Image (cartoon, rainbow, N blue to C red; front, side):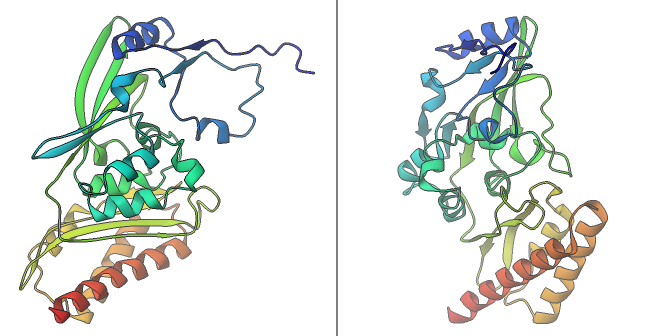
Length: 294
């Protein structure tokens, strides 16, 4: 039935150094983590053009979760389910909420943190939340017999259209997240990034809520196939903003936001723009409610 189609060669390194050696010999191989993205691609298998596979599931160092007084480090092969269960006492509310909304329980047991960050042509729920938490990733880039090791902020892994900026053979080994976070955090998602990517909007927000003003405001809007938006200008305007925020001010900020998104991300639809405006305003109304109740 599938004449001329071969099964891929599967390489199973047991350490990062073995991975580097394998990757240098097979620079065009597919890196396989949980497989949830790869197996979801149309016509992935069987295929007469299928390349070799490097499977990461045997590398024990990529499955570790460690922490100290300042940050937590998560191996790239840790699954969403494992992180959700292990991190309930140390992870921020926005990240716990994000992880709980990653697919179904079955998918969460399979999807890996590194794999969720490295999907090439679609942004899912995790990158935005990690970006506002100022998370950084350790990346090993293999160039022939040479390996370059560097730490990159999650917010700089993607261009404005949400495309992954890592090119060539790269391996994310771990994610580092600081334990000092804002005391007001929200995560919102409308529609599914997998089933309705052109309708879906993902929003992550955090700030430090003081007695009279807010500080350290960070937010990210993710449009799965149309954009990854962080506005440093608006974040600067929000930091130092008196609380509660007047409704007129919320309205002006939300329209400034949608105007900026429309200009920078032309593929974002009118429906997505309206949704992100309403989500942005809803977060500030919730913030005002908390301030007035105290």
